[in-house]
Amino acid sequence: MKEIKNTSRLAGFVLLVISVAAFAIYAYLLLTTEFGIIILKLTVLGAVAALLAVLGWIGYTIITAPASG
Image (cartoon, rainbow, N blue to C red; front, side, top):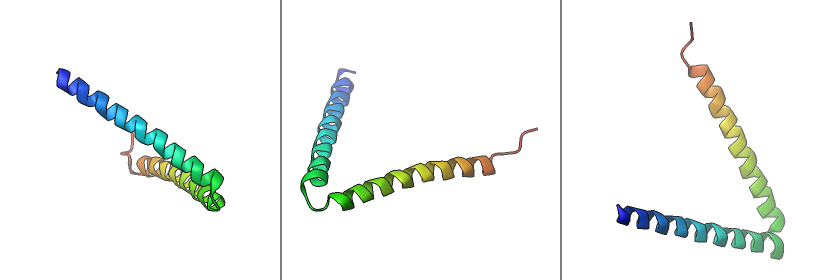
């Protein structure tokens, strides 16, 4: 049981380090390179795509749900 707890803590630490490093790289590329506008456009495109994918999934789920009563 203790080994599982240590593994979970290690996984949590790795995720924390990766997320902080990814943010630092993202901020560097966005603010200090000539690719800032492209990166911003791709970020917004990804966010809109994710939102519309969730809405589409909800719609599909409603359409395919069995009829009630």
